[in-house]
Image (cartoon, rainbow, N blue to C red):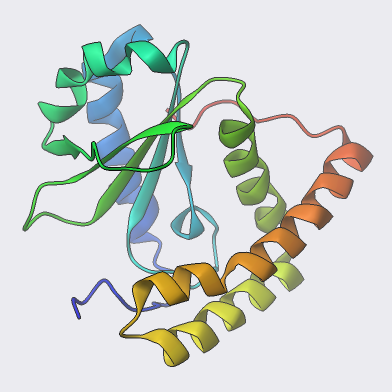
Length: 181
């Protein structure tokens, strides 16, 4: 297994790496990107994570992304046309490059908002952040050679946290903060 298929302690370098990549994306995409956000576990200070940077780009119309994919591909990312999730366009690093996942989603869509809510909730709820990290470590130990089982195994805790995040969002009137880039 590669070195990035492990759970690592939180690394402040992840934010720096995100900022470098996001700046290049912002320069390349300009107004095509409504938002560029650091999402996933590496975006939550203190959360143990696989050292893979997840970036969410929000666009006005997801259907036109394929016409504009060159602006992302010119930066060294490859469209994964085999991605089964129809709520996003998914780009990955070129082989041999640092692991980065780029999720392009329609602004205001359920999937875009869900990603941001999950991140924002974990950022202000350290007890659930710790619980999530512990479960990821447990699953990695069980399924270190079975990625799909690891990912599937996270489902119950993710949905439990999302249920709490939904209630929290109503209590505080949550809305996404300003874009990271």
